[in-house]
Length: 612
Image (cartoon, rainbow, N blue to C red; front, side):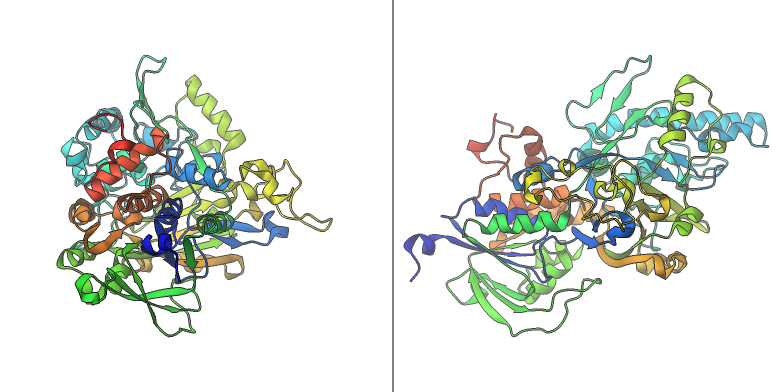
């Protein structure tokens, strides 16, 4: 017979063991006397999209690569606070970016000034015409700083305005002689703010996947939560120069060169170990059970359950999932379990499938409004492919005509340290559609031989002195500590976007099969304006109703930080505490999420001031 205390605990079912589900489970696990939690995960391990793939350490210098999620901005405070709780930490890395390859048409990098801006002055066209174009483009760059302030001041309005509409509203130049409006530097850089979520969408600029249904980026969400110009409260500063700059955790805006910094990013630790530690942590207090390879097939809630429980849930065992995220056989027999509350941390499509006819009209409208697109990532070591489509090496012929001291210093630095980790290119016959790539060796510290164990985890003793490069033998080809691996041994990841709308443009077949390490398909939400108008703005009206809460990055914006905050918020609404209540940086986004997605604010004992 269960004890009286156990009988009084609220029974909570969590569907999905990704960042959102594990965050909700963590918050609930801190109250073993009040909650009994069961997590259902249809794959073989926790983590969702955050996973690690094996590598040949004799060739690449490490035995794994993080796949799906590689890292994040330094402002992901809840993410890093959770890592700290689990004994892990992320490693700083300078984010060098490289756009395009043609020096006269589209190549640009944040390492040094290139010819892409000043090329107008040197083209064979009329000098006066080119000077006018040059000055218009310079004017656009200076205007962008003022526009950022307006967007921040009018956040609710710009939450449903696309980048293209914003550029027209503020009368940015719509045509440059050699740089079409659809591929403008401003749009590309705003686009870059979504590189971790792999889904950029604006009406007609850089990305457009399918006509006549264009996708959008929302100006406010980019600048407020994750974009390249993220601005917390004390973000504005006056530089020592005669003109002011805006300083941001990810980029520093400059009215002269648009971007004037190599932002610091954070590379995540080994995600497979992190999520295993997370699973162990949430189960350590005895009130949480994680069931992997267990698929939830249907749910009945409320009066339709015809029981004393609020939620009736059916599930079955599976053989896990494959690289296309499909459930594998053998499939077991369905069994039923009863719960008091339900937290759904799966994608909106899966939530509707599980609810079936039990979904309310409002749930069908709000969840059904989320649009998903399939991308495929190819992790490989094909240097020829990368060299064909991207700039991997510094070449002085790419330099701008600028000869001032700042430019000279940038050229010297690029000569020594040009090593981009993020690349993007437009397809030649349609500049609105793009391909993205990463140099994971430059991004993830475990692949660089100069890394030490203390860079990977907060408690190095948990690995008992293990070299993060893996065991080294006399026959190993891994480079010695202190020297980077040769470019031919680097690991790259190329992401081909929008299977249904752009697959005919893909150059996926050009990657040599013998160089492919792994391929994985990803179901990604589209950040179109309809998502914010028809889903994000209405989540508060279904969260908490019918004993059901929804969590996941898709509820706001597809990034790891939102996934974690959404899970913590779902647990908080059920009565759990917020585990980072003493950290104002963490609380800032948590409060915002509670207001937007739950229409609520923190409890009186957790807030400071009337308007907190």
